[in-house]
Structures are given as structure tokens and as C-alpha cells.
Length: 145
View 1: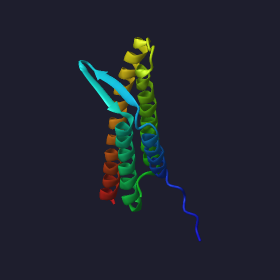
View 2: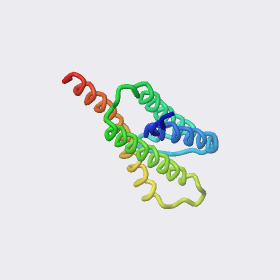
View 3: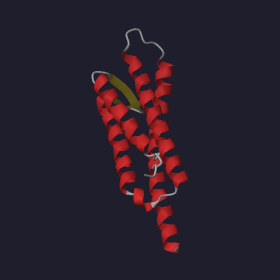
View 4: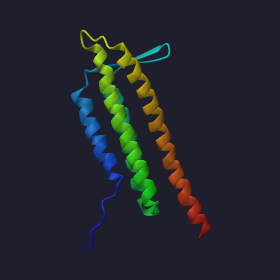
């Protein structure tokens, strides 16, 4: 019996399960984010569910394409960037909930955190374009054979 190497994309499923657990633990916690003149007040469980569903979708796509022999270094890079983006997004959301603590007065921190959430969300979304790039690289390599 040969030992199968652990695929790096399994970390996406593990992270999704952890974030799903967090969505149940912090289901009553609110976050307040504003973008220019728009205020977004939402429940943590909704944000965590969206992140977890995204991670599970990526895991499913990698699982479906596991026989396609995608370039390992590109897959590891994408998984790493995705997990870093998801972890930072989760951390910044926890920081956004501090505005609901009585006596909160550090509004410069709150403004900076809102900007970091927007930057990280953009980073997270752009990282997902990298997955499409991996598929394109694989298709180009296959067409040359």
C-alpha cells in the first residue's frame, strides 16, 4: 500500500470547518463596517458562512480537478494566499466588533480597520483569480503536448 501525499488544498476544508464553528460560537456578534457613505452592519455568522462557503467551494473545485495534475507550486501558492486572506479577514472582522464595546473611543483605529478590511477583501478576491490562472496554465501545457 503506497502512502498518498497530503494535498495542500485539504487545508481549505479544515479552515472552512474552523470558520463554520466560529460562525456558531459568535452568532450574536455584530460588526460595523462603512465604505464611504454606506454603513454595513451585519452578523458575524453571515460573514463567516460566506467565507466558509468560499473555502469549501475552492476545496471542491480542487478535489474535482485532482486528476488534472495541476502544478503543485501554483496550487500551494493559491492555497496559502487564500488562507492568509481568510485569516486576516476573520481577524479584521473581530476588530470591527470592538466598536460595540461600551466606552470605545479609538475611532482612528476603527477607520484604519475598515480600510484594512476593504484591502484584504480585494486581496482575497484577486487571489481567487489566481485559481483561474492555474487552470489556464494547465490547459496551455496540455495543448502543447
